Image (cartoon, rainbow, N blue to C red; front, side):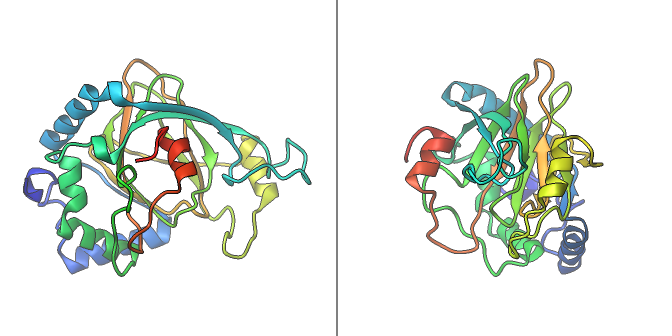
Length: 259
């Protein structure tokens, strides 16, 4: 399947250097890049059908965690921003469950698409995960399921919204809420976020949108899904170094299994 059967190439000339530079600039300025209608309608429908057909394979998780995705620090109170727990719940199917002819796999494996991403993300190259679970995930969020406030450990995230729920499922974020490299965790600012006292930004995302997001220092969440329509989101995970795989512990936590 060629890219012209998956993405709207007329709108998004991803091989064009000027277009790549514009995308790179937007991502650098905003911490987020949204390309609406990146996937064409046929590709969206194919992924929805695959997702519905494989819903029975879904591994569901519900967990509590702090926004830093770290263990509790006993030197702080339970309600302190360092330790305060939020809820995340979702289901997903993994890379080894995505069909070889799926538009998701064809896009993920495309050298042209990968070169576009590397250019926009300012990476020399992007590599698959070395395990057989992590590279492509399709996430499901049914009514009431959400992703709680958190910072990412990785420097970038690449997602495609496949199906939008009737309500909720809104991506909210606040940029520059910490400086992870400098060890500045901004507990006071995070406390205000958790108390609902900070103004948040919302990404307007419709099915077919490609989203590149830098969440290492931007706190973000997805609000609870409302209604009977499941929110479906494809996560395309790459590494800037080859040979990287999830640890067994992380694999069991995220997927309920190891390979």
